[in-house]
Length: 261
Image 1 (cartoon, rainbow, N blue to C red):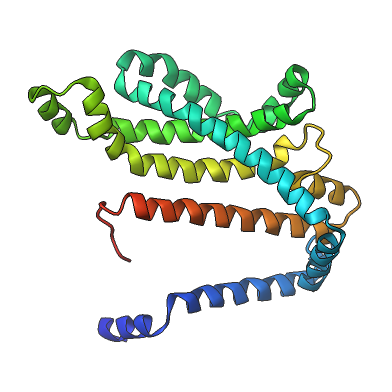
Image 2: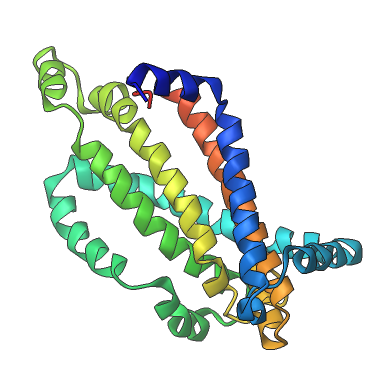
């Protein structure tokens, strides 16, 4: 098939059709796996649907989602507020970079779940302990991305502004901050994803409700339908949050050159 013909076929099939094909293929694979001996682990789609219905009818589904979302967004929000000044100081001042960068790289290599024992001893098993675990995971991801954005600002523009007499505050607000915005938004997307991936680890600190707690409790009773339902809900929440930030990214950084695939 020629390149022109391939392009015509690609244009004739809407992007949503590819998404639909991907969804059907994934469900088909799931049905196949659940029909084998792996059924012990992978409940069938029907069983998962019935488990979701049971949780929805009892009202527990929204209690778990509300508790988990509250923790994730609290940890993420706190991490975002803290990561901005740290990242900009590291990117703007060499001394701050030399002080903070080695520690951030060191702590980044440690999984958040490793802090659980320390967090429980220091803060008990309350909500603050769960938010702290999520905060650690999100903060490190965001501070590194935003820091890279500040470092990548075109030095020529900064020097030109200095030659024209611009003060540091003006350079920061008019050049550094706008140029770093794409990295800030990418950092937010990764931070949100990190806050959800550390959610289950955070809820190991004695949560009574939450999607992570629901999954842990269900696994103890081999209710793999509820386990899969919880995993799917976390995936859906993550996708929705990512789409929200992606929408903001398109609106706020429309001045960037984009490459169509």
